[in-house]
Length: 184
Image 1 (cartoon, helix red, strand yellow):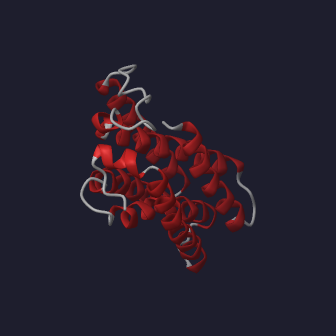
Image 2: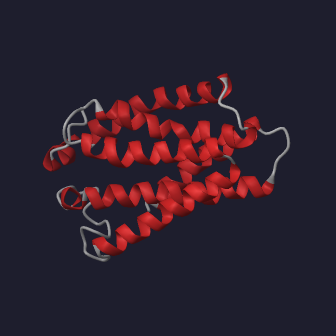
Image 3: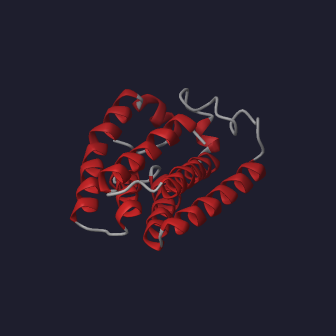
């Protein structure tokens, strides 16, 4: 699940929840955190399933469980599906808008961004969208509204990701080239 990465992503929704909430609903906040861990974790598992053969080629990723055959692809897929369904359900318990945003984020990351990394550096633009959704999701969880505040939080995170992606791409460029990624 890339647990440290998952926690940092979920932390952003946690912070934006506090920015938007007039009163902290600890049940809602718990649903947001647990649902977020399931959604982001499943996104990361799906990503690793799709890239398992490429991960073997890169020093940074060759020790992940799938390339090392520590877990079967079918078990990883089962876990990813269960986590995504649980995550979307928990987000739905907050409100339908949060569930829809989480579902869109999951879809864009897994079905568009991940395969697009092999085809085009434009993938960075697509990847920045689900990467910025957690800030919006936290706000919408607190307010049940997609207003200017949620969009502003989304845009701040969206634009921050370009230098973030490019610095990783630049520092890991040789590794990405081995796997055939078009990050830069």
